[in-house]
Every structure is written in structure tokens, then in C-alpha cells.
Length: 160
Ligand SMILES: [Zn+2]
Image 1 (cartoon, rainbow, N blue to C red):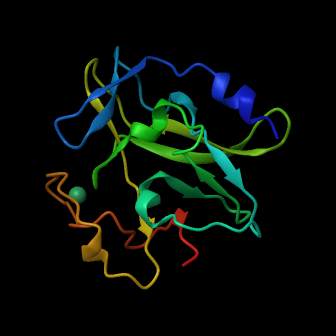
Image 2: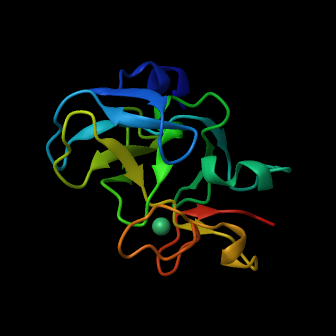
């Protein structure tokens, strides 16, 4: 496990500032081509069997990995935790392994991004039995599905 090293990895070409959509957002400082790595989604790691409570308030900072572990970007996270949700996103989180073979999430661009453009991730929350309407989306995309909850995919898991 090398979270410190992971957090020290510089994030490329982005800055965090106030977003017109919600709170703070992540913006491109320069044009970024599709398929580029922005950097790791950093945060506190939770093993699959590790006890955790009180995550409801920070659901949007949690990412579940395929081995059942979790990353909580609200604790020890980097600028990527400020990525806002959109139903028509321009970045995605891809699971990868780092040099020490730990599972990591890396934020990649999924299309060309202009300088000054805000970066958006589709949170695709797994809200368990909750009503998706509890997590409303106001991203304004033509195909906005009206919720931050996943419809088909699910990346973020809450063990309710
Ligand atoms: Zn939306």
C-alpha cells in the first residue's frame, strides 16, 4: 500500500475552483486530449471486511473497487474528489494497478477537453434500496437521468 506516494503524484493540467454547477469543481488549465490520465483518485482505503459507519453523508466521495475495497476521497483525497457529477461526463475512473501492485483508480479523459472546461464524472452511485430520487441530478445534460444513482453500471457501493 502506498497511499502517500499516490497522493504525491502530481495531477496534470487541472485546478480546483468554484463551479457554476455545485460547490467546487475541477477545471482544465489547458486543452487535454481524450484518453489522457489526469491522476489517481486518492483517499483513505477500506479493506472489504473493514468496519465503516456514517458514510451516508459522503456517498459521493466513495468509490468501490472490484476486490470489494473502498476509497474514501473525503479523507486524504486529492483534487479529484472535487469532480462534479454529470450524466454526460468527460472523464471516467478506471481501475488499474500501480507499481507496487495495489489497486488504484485513475481518472482518464473520455473526450477532448478545452482549456477552462469543467471536468465531470458520472458518479453512478449504488444507492442500494434507496430511492434514486433521494440523489437528484441537475447537471442539465440533454440526456440527464435525473439522479446521481447508477442505472446500469455501479462503481460506488454503500454497505448499508
Ligand atoms: Zn444529470
